[in-house]
Length: 264
Image: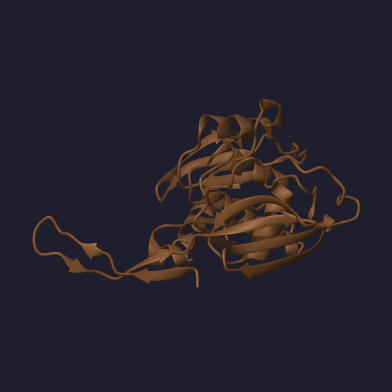
């Protein structure tokens, strides 16, 4: 179960306090392990963990693509979860970047100890396709009813993939915005679905690492409901990725790639 029912006491400013049932999302540690070597402990919503492990492995740059992941086994232990990822023989002996901190749900650079370790995904050579405002509007409308955990808890993020017409294809939710995106990317990689000209739709703040994770998958257009950071815009420019943000029912702001936006 990705949620648990608690009974906090509600204190209205006017009137008597009362016990009130409330659903909250579960947040649990998962240790990502490669070939018996612990790599990171991430705080996640404990659903779709195979998707998460695959997406995390590729977007972190541990494996260049999904073909180098031969097996994912998730184990439940008394102190948390373990995702054992088996890599191909070509990668099994590689040195993994050490992480000195646990991966908190809001972090982006946990374990990076020097500026030389600052990561960046490989720039995708494929030019972004034009994106229609109609597709963005349809994607936003569809996402409203495709977040069951958020509907119950109002406390999780979502990452969704839509085709070029704005039709919703896949959604993943998690307490961590990075985790939601890793789950989405992992799900698509596991089923062999390429990015193509689809749209990546995010409900969270658009930070630089989400742009890099999207680039690692091959996405060329991001639509974010929240605003981007300055570094996210810089990374979108570096990847020449269309970045639309502050997406609302009445329109969006184009932070990069405005010349690719089409009406209709």
